[in-house]
Image (cartoon, rainbow, N blue to C red; front, top):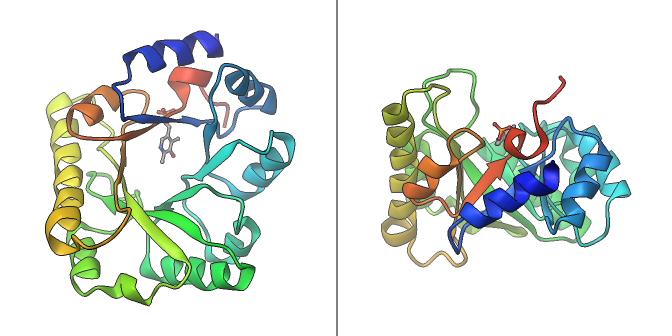
Length: 221
Ligand SMILES: *Cc1c(COP(=O)(O)O)cnc(C)c1O
């Protein structure tokens, strides 16, 4: 089942768009099945679960941390992530930077933007992000490389609202990339789109999608 689901998504995915298999809450056997089908990038959202799985999977597995990261757990994951997609405050960003220095690693991250209508979601507002980059506060970072932006659309069946949210995220990304901080190197990831909305996200310019249930089935929380 997992292999077939992956194959279907690979076939539909345009060139230049990468797939992160969101494996949170799924057992290691499911990750192994996806790995055997060729999948290398996996997304996890809880530190303890992530650390367990890192130990169990082959070394060339690429791990994306996609959940809210508590500051007291940052140290535990240093050097183990390919990309932390969920930087949601400047305090967290600065801490990841200092902990990266301490661990002697470089950490690649995305800034999480919040445009969805739910209050509960984490992330910077569009204004906060524009301000962060126009004030060039990223120049302080010593061991963190900001590679782009991650965002989610509102949780609704209204396709117009979802497309609108993705368009706003894509516009903020493009503005930062081409106007506000056009000299920023390697700022080229726009991560948006999940199981139910990734095709809309790709149509709006996403080049990285994070898909869980459409690959692994429903999660048992
Ligand atoms: C859980 C999660 C996903 C995957 O959601 P699905 O609807 O199962 O595809 C994607 N992104 C983030 C940030 C998540 O927390």
